[in-house]
Image (cartoon, rainbow, N blue to C red; front, top):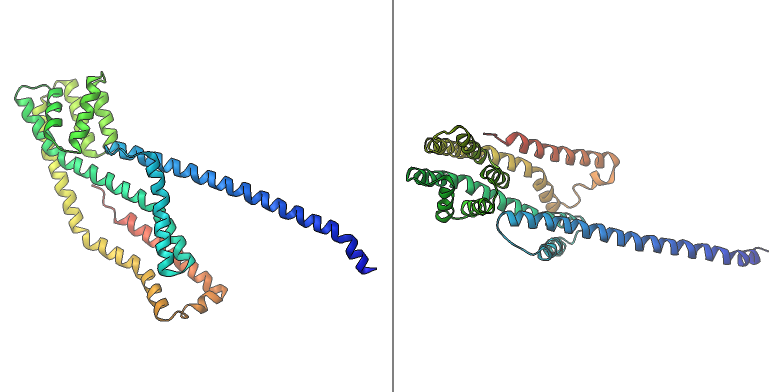
Length: 292
């Protein structure tokens, strides 16, 4: 009786397994397509944001090129990590780092450009001060500044002049410049110009005081950077001490940490150590910032 029962029930069981596999196939197909769609949307948003940042820096790159960049860089870094390490977790970590590299590069370029803009403000204000003393108007002084100065201040002032020529009020053009190049120095300059125009103050005296103020702020920032260099280097060394120790010990004795992986208490201690390490790095970065 048992063989016949198995034979009679094998058809429905086979059909049930077939439906189950079919449902898993549909879920995997639509799930993969949904994930690919979400991933494509994320790449489009990243490329759009990066293209906007490049346009603000007067660097014009097609969005398709940026999308390919966000795909090629992680794949290249992940492939190199896999070839060198032959380990899955190193490859995944390299993929994450590769995905962040374009964002880091763009942010570094943006910060350097803004820092150079602040440094150029001193020379720019001196040029405008000389123009005003020579009898030129404020708008004409901006035109001379755009012709005399190099990027980035020359580019930004040229854009400001074009906005004024198409009918944008000077106040609004200055506010837009302040938004494009946000810094305390630029906010101070735009506020001083607007207040002097409303109250009828002498812009030459205002610019002379602004030159001294901005120059002193730049010197103070450089002094703080120099004095905190040793502390920042110590924080970097302390942050890397744990990961470097782990890698070196794994190279010398690969079985040294097996007792930690094999027990539940050991895995818990490793997880706590990792969380504390990340927390310590974050606290070092937060406490190491000096606001001026």
